[in-house]
Image (cartoon, rainbow, N blue to C red; front, side, top):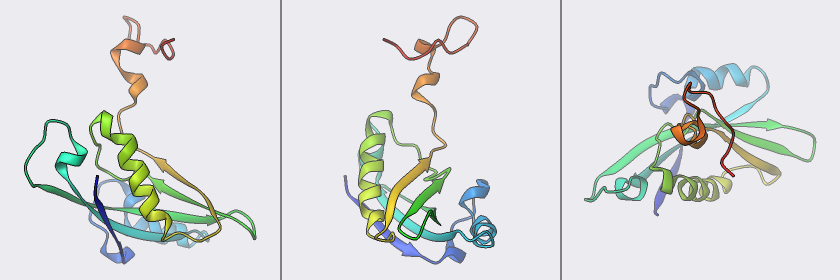
Length: 140
């Protein structure tokens, strides 16, 4: 998997209906003492989605919010992003590689990078629900 990541200006983030991934949200959080960074990434669709060939790419972006926890540590948070949803078998690898690249742009005292993904839950599938659609818990 090859992901190209570039830092970009907050004012240049793409328009999106996801409020938490907008320049406006970055400004709101800035007023609360939270710093933001914006990144654009490019990845081949065949690395994201199963049964996809060719040379097409996806280009998208995301905001990372950085909050000071103490004098010694910060945390980074990606609210509802990135917006794309890779095929299930590629999700872990995608996030791992993206995180490793973004890590170099984060403060050296950053102790965690958290994603709140807008992806379908693996636990929300029919295998984990009863006939009325209620979750039965993880399989054993």
